Image (tube, rainbow, N blue to C red; front, side, top):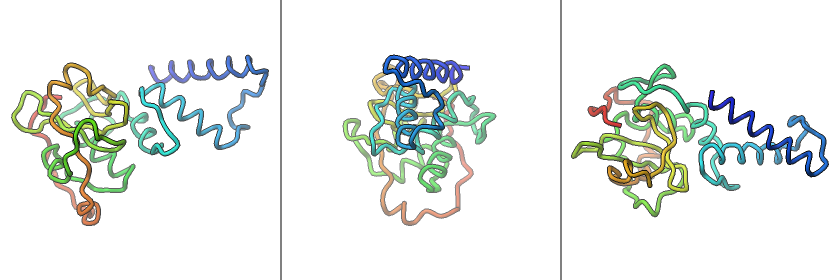
Length: 196
């Protein structure tokens, strides 16, 4: 429902801007591919609260958009319900063509730790929520925002939010050695903690 409302709002804003400039073309299929991509970037940046640049990985943002609102289900791995590590694993498989491990702690073993101020688009963010061990993982999008499967479902949140700021542990960037070694084998374990 939110996606539909946002899409309608975007269409109205585009139509209004065209009316102000005297451009009566409303069919986006008549637009040049660069203009269509620009509209897509504008739309996604408004939804996600991240300024998309020319170098932004649009596949990443489209993937996240398609999964927003998917319910949370501990141990879940599908559109019917998914947990944080399965969402991260699926994203890395689809967007980066990498088969990473299944639990947030195992994923952390594959990264080079990165400070909050050094995070880049596509990096991972790890949390210790009500635990001494890593219990939650998400994907950094930029501008302090990250995508994750929370207890409320797949969503975009801010690292500056009091809750996530309190439990943030570290950022991480997949080690080059793992990128070279990753194969189709995966570990069937899931996160032990259900605190997202």
